[in-house]
Image (cartoon, rainbow, N blue to C red; front, side, top):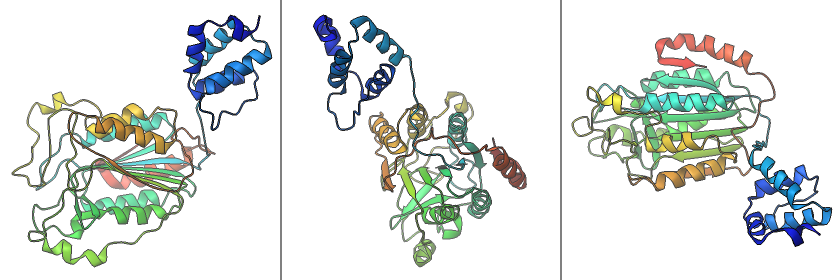
Length: 354
């Protein structure tokens, strides 16, 4: 008797519920030439092919067990290298000190290294020092690489320009010299012509008041222009004029004023867990998903939107080529790692590289 004749109704329903990925694995195991692209019910197509090939129920179940225990990583491209620049600003001189940026960057670095990234962590920098350090790192990244840039710290927004704030930023009359703009970051990363650039800013996006910050508004004509080389994904952990939150209610910044925002107190660090911001907690839990980067960020944003604290991330995408954080590099990263380590010796204790 054929497979369809002997298969129980319960097993048939289970086959119809198989994911396309599981169907693809079983098809390879059974040496079936099937393309599941555009097929609404991959399981139904699969069982018909298995039936035509004469496979038994027992053989199908053996294929299923193997498929359930098999994790095949989907890759889309071979970049020259993969480098992550992780920026943590938490020890501010005038603004409130933050609880988790350094912890978040260390958690991200650990996860990204498992995916083959070289990780550079830059901590507690003024805007001028940060710009100098980032430029030195980017100058060493070969063309056709993947570049992952993450920032955690105080941030603000003016006229749709997103600004990372250096640790020397004042509470009033902020100027562009205290900021690293999103435009500047994208302009710099363009120099290495990356195949993929991911820029994530986990920061509040409070709009600056024009009356208390006249200098920065008068400098708007100086905002940098930038170009996009290939695939770019920019993510903001929250929407315009909104705050970014942490998993635990240690710190919730709704302003950049030191007198109003929460400042880390003795004993609070014991309550902080790895990946403690809402966004990084979701991101770290999703990094191992076998999906392209665009889908990965969509899943992260869905997780964040369902968090206890109201936070709606935003993703901007330029370029439609599918790329994955799992994509393997063409050559060993050893030589590039050595060059970056030598460069980072100049940064003293502000930088770690692995």
